[in-house]
Amino acid sequence: MKVFTAVVLAALAATGAAIASQHMGTKTVKVSEKEWGMPAVPAKVAAGDVGHLKHEFVVIKTKRAASKLPVKGTRAVETGRVGKIAAFGPGQTKKLTLTLKPGHYALICNLPAHYKTGQHVDFTVK
Image (cartoon, rainbow, N blue to C red):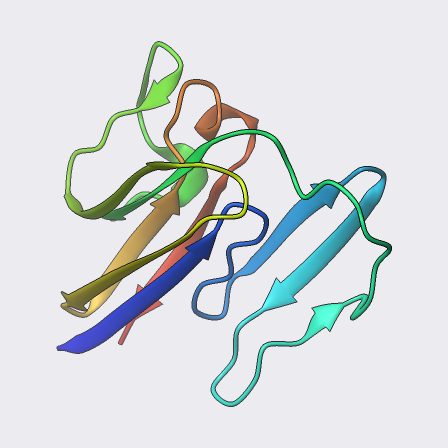
């Protein structure tokens, strides 16, 4: 089993080899977390608002692609959920530590309409 720790910022969330992006006005920053680094492109942006919405972080063990979870209303169905960080505000940092078995996981924000607007990524534990 692998120990998975996610530190999530409302402004930017990067997990595993996944790519996460956060819109900062008209600027998008892409971050990928790798074995020995976490490059951000671009590495610098002008000061400004990093967001005004709350987010949450949900880890779901599933065979489905993160983009193909069943939806009920404005949220994804969380069957297989193994961990969650409840809603948090912009600029806050939260930490979630899980021991994950090998398999496929969907990492999502499941606040109303967030999942449906693309706040999800696939994650694999080998």
